[in-house]
Image (cartoon, rainbow, N blue to C red; front, side, top):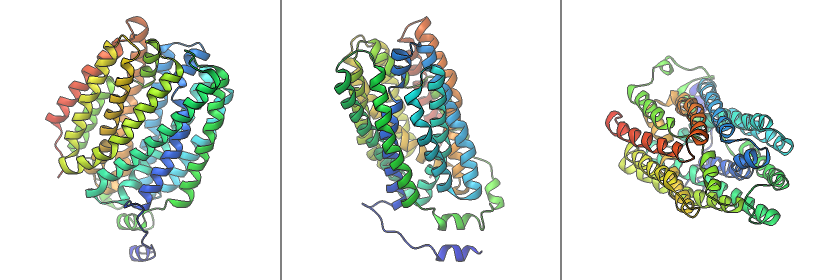
Length: 412
């Protein structure tokens, strides 16, 4: 089969609300998935501490280990997607596997069982994320890449808002303003949360398509050309190094949830804080992506890390529960500024034929360091004070911001 025959058979697809159909439907897939995941896993640290009776060190271990292996799977799935140029296939496998394991949280009775389920969910995420991000990047030109990733993140986070809003309704209906999470409440969250996960897989199966023109331009019959063996450039490697510095202080977000409860917030209030966090995240993600298309990704990421440092310092200094409402909102601004723009920055720094692999290496660096960062945070929480992990995170974020501006040059 020739490259020409591959390209002429693909029919042009009409944009949806100004978006490439793949960007729109992958955003919808992420929206449904986040409705599910936020209901089941976001308040998982409260399940581990309040219901299973474990401590902050166990929470850090679960959060760090599962995110680390998520990153490892991203490397392999990214490489495979570059090799076979079938990004959708791997995305379906990843989303499908996460959907299969989620119901097992209903019967989890130990932190080991909870770890196993969360591990399976993160493994699915690791399999799907790099091919999905590469598919988004392949579907649009560079001039629209920041906007597309920003919109994708906004739709993803809208799902988180909906999921947490549903969770808040269930929690308030079943246990009111109780300080601790109860088992029967959590089981209802799992049952309801399974439904949107199934819908996400169905949308992916029927509405997302491979970018055949891009794949054919890279390789015929699934065989990569010699060009794909070129090594990553120095700027990409420096960016990974700087991300490593930042991640050493960026422990699992589980600790922010525990900190809110530590300051006296009830389960329903923590859930509503998470809604606020995701609302600000969703509102900021698209404008941040558009801004990065105009001003450059590096400046926008540096701004996000400065916001992160300020938020973590604020969490460390907080003494009242109401402070966390403001800090959760500001933390959403950080996520909105950085998440989509960072992925677009990675896509800018590497050649097209290595984009899937790069989309795996980037979170791999984050994930590899998240385990020691989270275990360290749990140890500092229990041995020193609940504030100490956040002082560390603020300091390293500031160092990373300066390093980014000085060391990494933006590709034009």
